Amino acid sequence: MSGFCADPEGSVGAFLCRAGQHLRAAAIPQPRMEARMLLSHAMGVTQEALLRDPRAPVPGAAAAHFAEMLRRRLDGAPMAYLTGSQGFWTLDLATSPDTLIPRADTEALIEAALELFPERAAVGRILDLGTGTGAILLAALAEFPAAFGVGVDLVPGAAALAARNARRNALGERCAFLAGSWAEALAGRFDLILSNPPYIESAAIAGLMPEVARHEPLSALDGGPDGLVAYRALAGCLLRLLAPEGRAVLELGQGQEPAVAALMRDAGLRVPGARQDLGGIARALIV
Ligand code: GLN
Image (cartoon, rainbow, N blue to C red; front, top):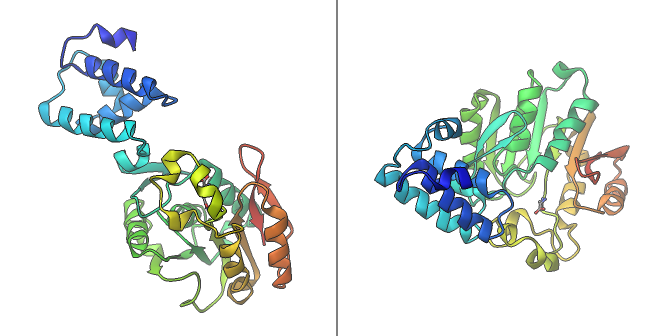
């Protein structure tokens, strides 16, 4: 922060200096980067533009917007809810408190799908159960150019946000989003079924990072007493929804592979394996 702290009162540099100090004092891991992200969002300019001219004045409205975002960030609100967007795979997605914020670990599902279907044009129909922002379905549609996708979410606000994200990424013509409970209202068969269901054990929610536990929607996190309630619902519908050569790829919580694989096998499905995420955790179960 030191370089900016000598910049004149009211300048970009002075705002970055002071915000960085507050964020660091709150033990936010990347205070400089977050200060830049928030100020660039408040001023509507790129981070590069901020760094090019740190002596530029911050206009009053931007300063007020910045102060409000900084206050909420210091109160623990996730960055993606403040800036309203999050990168996932090759996409930029709008976020809202109706949905989980897309995580890098979830990209393991896309990697697994690409490995399962090296012939990209062979994938015609994709389903995403519990679609949230639409991240997983939209990333898959970006990779499988011949596919049409359906995304379902229990929360109507999530289905609406996902539809907006489809348009934002020029994929709106290739998918539809529905509000509903898992696959209840669906018929037909899909080549690829994707899901990142809620899988945290109810009693463990309070122990998650406060940023997650206090701000992200419980409906996207809480997997019931044993964390497996959503997988039972999935086990009950995958056989009916998968095409003969179809595959499902399901996100797993840490250590859940054996239990979820057993549920799927009991439902008459084959489970050839799982793919690890960047941290080496079995994250994407292939069904
Ligand atoms: N991976 C999320 C977390 O760590 C949980 C997401 C989920 O339950 N599907 O908070």
